[in-house]
Length: 372
Image 1 (cartoon, rainbow, N blue to C red):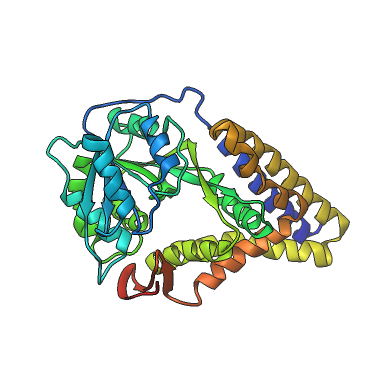
Image 2 (cartoon, rainbow, N blue to C red):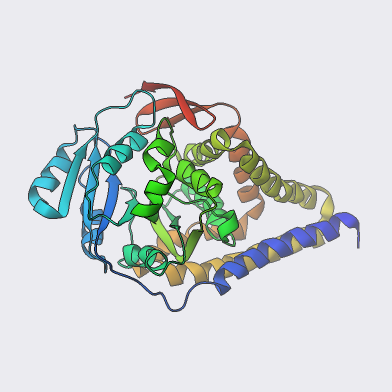
């Protein structure tokens, strides 16, 4: 056995073992908590349509909470919802930022509007399709004192489009990575922490001037040596359109690169090893190397199929599984696309997001321009 083939065997074995590890550690007893004093923070854009499905899903949560919607002050749908829902919805009008991400600006305004009785803070994104257990599951480790910051992760639901499915396959590699507190960053689409932790981190100051809310909170948590806990069964369904799908992937890595070059570099090395491995297998490795790569890819897809079936609502399974076909039919393309997104992220410090162009250095916004 040549050294190159042995290394390829190791890479494929580790990738399959990682997905198996995730599946084996999916919680069976998915315990929840429903304490008093829970507030859910939701930042929305001015063109938000009211999120009818999201509101229905939030209403169906097993844990009770107050919904705090943060706007710039020009969102008619949010105003109408607050009027209709009464006490359940609290509206915060943040105005327009000039030196930080607009989402961060709204969340900081929401933090300043917290009430004395608010003890648990849950952050969600406007584009998610959360299961009914979302809030209760994230609260469980907090209430039981098992974690300081709790997070789920996105599971993309790509539309029937090859680009969206390819990016979904790339994201699936990240979603099903083994999770450990020492290697976890929170995802702002489904994240929770206690009021005590928010005050310990001085969250308003930690977010000031930043573009990425979850990176800022995660890095602050790491520096404070807090316990960051992933909830593995909370892979939260998030739709992905084909148009702009590749740009979405690049933007995620640009957030990482502009906040932590070291973290971005480690990710590039890991994915680059697989991408270059596939280049060797297809070009010089022969049929045994290609067969090994495909066998591992099929194995990963089968395990991921089991994971998807176990964590999302039945109606979301079909869309989530679209990503698996890329890893079965062209796993090399997934690795190349993934590495391409990482490398493209280093080409600029400009991040286009939410109707603004931001230039970021060291995680902080140095310039922003409204584009539409």
